Image (cartoon, rainbow, N blue to C red; front, side, top):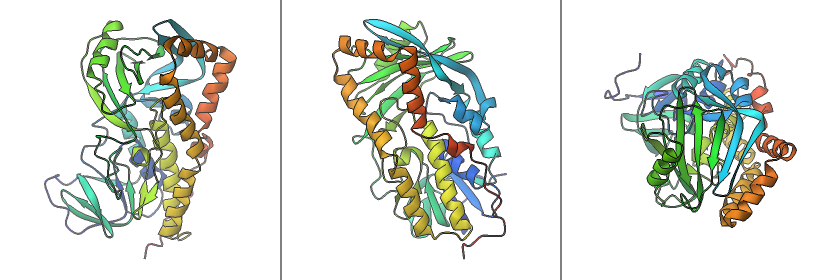
Length: 370
């Protein structure tokens, strides 16, 4: 049982403290299973209690991580709609629309970590500061999302490389992930519909965080004949950020591990969470210093700058195309052979081989935290 959240964390220490208990933080904790390390995960909410995304990820990733039982519906089709035409295509792989709470539970059960509810407020020498007191740890991970709370310059959300998304969750169905591009709804952005079993997740995302998305969300729901109920939303980073700073490892949205254009960040959280956990294990086993692990992880993240840069360039270019020209581009790209090549390239931006690697042998008894 966790201590009651209002009780102070007195002299709380751990070998590793992971701040954030969503996709990225849980992926890191999972990677540390089997070590003798005391891994403490902190979050202001209970694990799996607060989804902020459409909760869909490529099925190959969900299967590789043993998370397929959380999937409410597989989506082998996508449909792209503009004011001038609509194009439906079968993908070379499927999206999986999953139950957030169940996926988080599955990830958590694969870890050997412990959990405390606490609001992380910032970095202190040798640990982090929370609303319940100081937590000491030599290894610190920021998986708290776009705010980058433990960075030298946390984000406030009023500017910078962020997108804004909002969605509703009415009852409904379908077999395709819909993308709607209509400048009358959003000048720079898109709307979506993600069927997930007995509900659909319908929303709007603007590449400009200052643009309100409540009205576009309501309008696209109306076009699909759906109610605007059960709202959720968030800000989404669309530029890669340094993954190591201030003696801290940054994973997921805190490091900008989210593709521009599509705003897909769950796969990045998994991928870089595994990579971060791999470096933490090296430190725990005495194979690397903290500084060496930070440098290696930071370089690994930066080595993916090209792929993230391409999606950011597309995010800038495509909204500038005249609507009819954009429709012609989508038509050309939606042919089966070219479409398969594009989506396989997109999947390969974060190679699945990292998730398919066997979990490392137990490092129990090999800690070198001194």
